[in-house]
Length: 68
Image 1: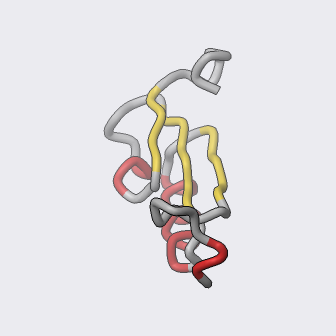
Image 2 (image 1 turned 135 degrees about the vertical axis):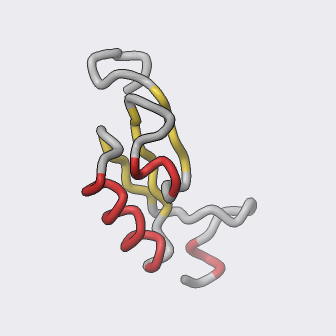
């Protein structure tokens, strides 16, 4: 990833979000990370699988408009 593709704080300009933070989201986050893509997951619990590898985590319910 070139410098032009990164923001001033070093975060990627590319970001993918997942509603749910299970095993599939974890595997996607790992793959995205190797490509220099930041990931955000909406996890129902703080110990969901993808929480440990995502760039950013939001803990909340998928039925809560504020969390989305």
